[in-house]
Amino acid sequence: MNTYTSRVLVVGTGAGGAVAAALLAQAGLDVVILEQGRSYEPEDHADVITSFTRMYVNGGVTLALGNPPIPIPLGKAVGGSTVINSSTCFRPSREKVEAWDCLDWDLFQTSLVSVEERIHAVPADESLLGGNYTVLKRGCDALGVPIKPLVHNLDGCKKSGRCTFGCPTGAKQSMDRTYIPDAVAAGARLYAEHKVTGVRDAGEKLTGVTGISPDGPFEARADVIVLAMGALATPAFLLRHRLANSSGLVGRGLRIHPASRVAAEFDEIVDGDQGLPQGAYIDHWRERGIMLEGISLPPGPLLSGLPGAGFAFKELAARRRNIATFGVMVSDTGAGRVRRGFAGAPFTALYQLTQEDAENLRFAMVRLGELYFAAGAKRLFTNVAPMPVIASEAELREFERIPVKPGYFELMAFHPTGTCPMSVQPRNGVVNSFLRTYDLTNVYIMDGAVIPDALGVNPQLTIMGLAHRAATLLAERLQGA
Ligand SMILES: Cc1cc2nc3c(=O)[nH]c(=O)nc-3n(C[C@H](O)[C@H](O)[C@H](O)COP(=O)(O)OP(=O)(O)OC[C@H]3O[C@@H](n4cnc5c(N)ncnc54)[C@H](O)[C@@H]3O)c2cc1C
Image (tube, rainbow, N blue to C red; front, side):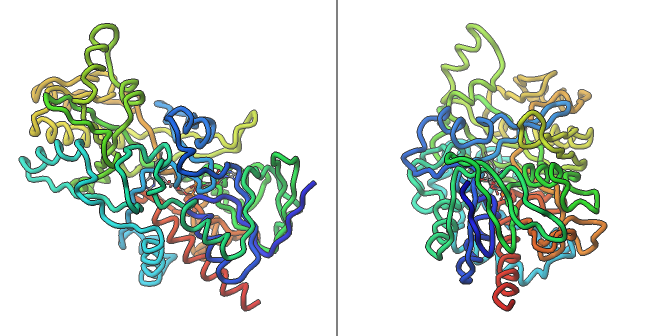
C-alpha cells in the first residue's frame, strides 16, 4: 500500500482545495493533495458526451431527490467544478458577509482581490457576449431594465461557447491552470485519481485518511487535514465516518440556488452558442432573491430541453439557431439535506423546493418573458408543466396567474452550499471562523459547505476567498508552531 506523509493534507482540488493547497505550500509547508479525478489539458476537452463522462461526477447524473428531483452537476477533475463551470465571478455582498458574523469585511476583501488578480477575473468584453445578449439587451433597453456583462476568470477567450464542458483553448483560468500549478511549483505533491474513502483513527484529531487509486489502496497521514470535497461529498464523508457532528448540523442546511431557463424563438438568427454561455446578468429583482444570468447550450442539450414531438419538433430543431436562452435563479427560502451515500454513491441529497421559491421562479420567468417579447420574440419555451409554450403577451399574463406547484418546474442547480456551516457559536456551526471543525482540532473544511446560507450570487469567488483567508491564517499558525 502507498503511504503519503505530510504536514498538511488537502482532499479535493476545486475552488476551495486548490486555493488552500497553494497558499499553504507557498508558505513553505509540506503539502500533499489528493484528488479523485484526473488531470486534463485543453486538448482533452473534446465533445460534450466525453466531457460529461470524464469530468463530471457520475457522468453528470447527480441529483437531489424531491418533487421535482433537481440535477446538481459536479466536477470531477484536478480543478474540481471550476474546470466545467461557467467562469462567472461574483463578489458576495457586504451585507451578506457581515450577517455571517465570522469575517472582517476589509480582510476578506483583501483575500477576494488577491484571488481575482490570480484568476484574472475581469468584466467580459461586449464582443464576447454573443447573440443571447444582443437580443435580450434590445428588450432590456425597451423596458428600462439594466443588463450588465458578468465578470469572468478568462484570459484570451476564443468564444468556443462551451465553458461547462471544459475550455478547449485553456482561456478559462480555472484551478487546474492557476492555483494547482502554483501549489505544485511551491513543492506540493499532487496525487490525481486518488479517491478518499476512509479514515485512520479519530479522537480529538484525525490522523489520516485511506482510499483507492489505480495503483491500489493508499493511506495519507498528516498533522493537519483540509477537507475540500465540495458541499455534497464533504458532509456525506463526515456522516459516514461519524465525525465533527456534535452540533447535529452536518449535512443539514443544503442550499442550491434552484435554477431554470426561458428559451425564446426569434425571426432572426441568434446563434446563442457562439460567445460566452454566461455572458451577462440582470439583478433588477435582486431584493426578491432573483438573478437572471446568461445560459447557452450546444445544440444537443438545447434541443433535448425543448417541447414537442414528431414533425413539429423537427421544424423547431431546424430553427435552433433562432432560439435564444437565458437563465433564472433564486435564493432558496428553504433548505435540503445531505445524507451519507448508499450503494456506492458518494452522497444522498434531499431537497424540496418551497412554494415561495416556485412563485419566485415563475415571477422571474415572467419578467424574462416580458423582456423577450419586447425584443421581438415569437414564442417562449418555459419548461413549466402547464404552459411549456407561450405564444403571446396574453398567454404570458395567463402564465402569471395560473396556480403553480414546485413539481411543475424542470430545474437544475449548480451551487450547493451550507452543509457544514461556519459560525462563531459551536451550536450553530460545524466549523469556526478559521474554518476549523469544532470537534476535531486538526481538521478544516475549505469548500462550499461552510457558506452558511443562500449566497444569492455564484459562489466560486466566495469559496476561493474563504479558503484564501483561512489558509493564510492556518499557514501563520503552523509556521509559528
Ligand atoms: C456546470 C457548472 C457551472 C457552474 N458555473 C459557475 C459559475 O459560473 N460561477 C460560479 O461562481 N460557480 C459556478 N459553479 C459552481 C462552482 O463551480 C462551485 O461552487 C465551486 O467549484 C465549488 O467549489 P468546492 O471547492 O466546494 O468544490 P468543487 O469545485 O466541486 O471541488 C471538489 C473536488 O473534490 C473532489 N472530491 C470529491 N470527493 C472526493 C474524494 N472522496 N476523494 C478525493 N477527491 C474528492 C472532486 O473530484 C472535486 O475535484 C458551477 C458549477 C457547475 C457544476
